[in-house]
Length: 472
Image 1 (cartoon, rainbow, N blue to C red):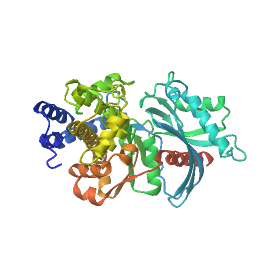
Image 2: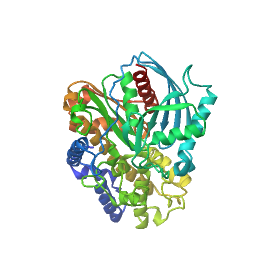
Image 3: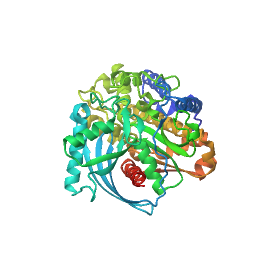
Image 4: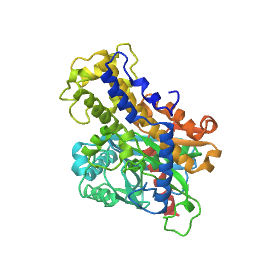
């Protein structure tokens, strides 16, 4: 894009010259609603800083949670040992055996279990215990001599308010989960009780968010890591903050630093600064957590396809695409997967053959014209562009809140399907951030890198530090 403070920059690429005036008027209005200009990003950064400061001061449901994680030791890359880790995400449960080699490298033995719809709705804790039991049995793992349990780090990718390094109360479900009798309760106790019911000899010694795990994994191989970010099914970030700045921290000892979990998916739930559209509102209104995690719903893999589906259906209703027809599949919520967006925006063929396949073969839509396919690709690009620009705004806001760090090199470990697979996501993060962080810093001192398997390895690293402190 040329002038990213000119609204026309966000409109012209999405018009269809061979389309009707009515079609292009609708595309123009839609593009304007999804646009995130540079001035809008500055407004968002200002809003982030206000919310971060308020969240560090005291707990308040109307601002960013800014949760102290009790993680206060940076990895050095020299740690050694073998540890167990669980990584409970929005789609999969990973059970990992992590061996830290002491030279910034590690080896990983893992097993991935797809979380069943039943587990997401009712029996999650027993599902976790059963999967861990299977892993221990298949890899012949048992407690070390003289110990009754295997110490384990637990990456829990849902919002919790931590009360200790190995305790935290679930604040809410997201990512499509709705397990009853869980919100407000200690998820370690819930998991540990399931272990006992299923005779699984494992003790959770540390619980952490997936972003904290990503931060710690990145720090093991890149000592200048200051942030961990997830851009995937959901989104969140964690960063190193000076304890002196965490005013709500109860201890009198304010020396050193601690990882803070922002839970930034909850930013601006009141939609005071975010570019909120009717298509977002429709998604939000039908979601499990209506009115919550509004920022996450604008930039994350679980939701982007649904925003596109809602937007395209408004054009269907006005008979501006597919001749006003749809399909049983496309009419159902969450059938337009964000992975389809990735395929569609990367299709540069003259006839948009891949778009045609997704629409007609996968989604069973009636035969499409080239104009239909251009419209769908353009809507995908509108929603995708908004996602990456909002993502860059949030990342920039956290870095700008710690300006002293930007004088040196800064690594940011990032994990998640959007970062890995959405076309040009990383390149666009760099490009957008230059405007707000400065060309010199972004080009010479900022390094974004994939922290692959970050949440699992990070849990093992934190479990190791806790186990060492217990032994001393």
